[in-house]
Image (cartoon, rainbow, N blue to C red; front, side, top):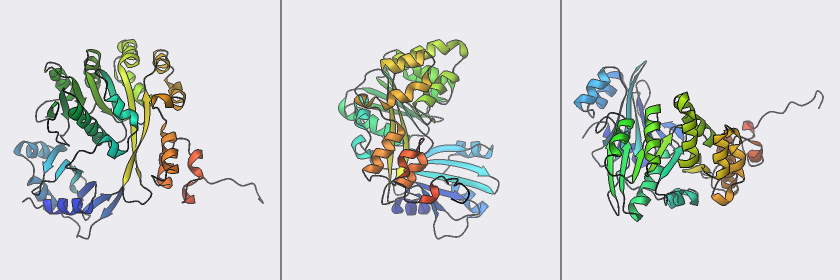
Length: 365
């Protein structure tokens, strides 16, 4: 058993989402959004490097020793599965282990809007799940893939960096391929997948113009494409895709988005009222004729008003979703306040008044 497994076992027993190991500080656990140290001495440089090298393959060790970060999945001695990033910093080695649940949660269990389940009925087009790192995008996509796998007879090809949730083929065949292990890049993975008779292609991250372009081609040619972007809203997602591609392809890109983009789901993870968990809160934009026209005429800044009025299509702005979840006593209002764009609607729910803006009172008032 690798020595690092003892820290991982402790972390999973505590129910944490991440285990942080770094030189000069004790091991730390991410518990319901907060980073907390465990009762242990500060880790030394050679000690932690020894722990890390025990779980790296020879090729990963060579890559790491060349000064690169290493991303991989790791299964501990007791069967726990983790997404790992190993890096070097000013004081030495560091590593972060993201705990991957053994069971794939359902969309219902995640409490996601009903429209997300309806999106899984489509046969072609692109669905994007966006948000900052650690906002639960991978979990939502895994739940969507599991629903497709359980209810339809499909060939699902998942391109990941690294593989997180492991899918067992049910009604569908699920093929999982890992960046760096099975394919050199996401773009090459999509290109290869299109020759493998796919129905659904999951692109773990649309991080460059070539990958975005290949994913768009797949969606246009009769496949359902699921992907992620590190963007915080539908407008920023659309603008990011348009800006990522060459200017001479701008009109073609806008045409693709208006015709083949099905929806953008943007997530944040909010602390629950009892601070014993976190809940995904979603902004949802579903493509309509009105939104398609705004994209084609360079008026993406008007999309939020369409989302706000689009409840009949399952749409909601992040602020609307936050207020509804606070009113239902599902999430902590103080934490929700930090995610709101227009904070006025949430001010009356805030319990920690120190987070509220200070008012400039007139002299003598």
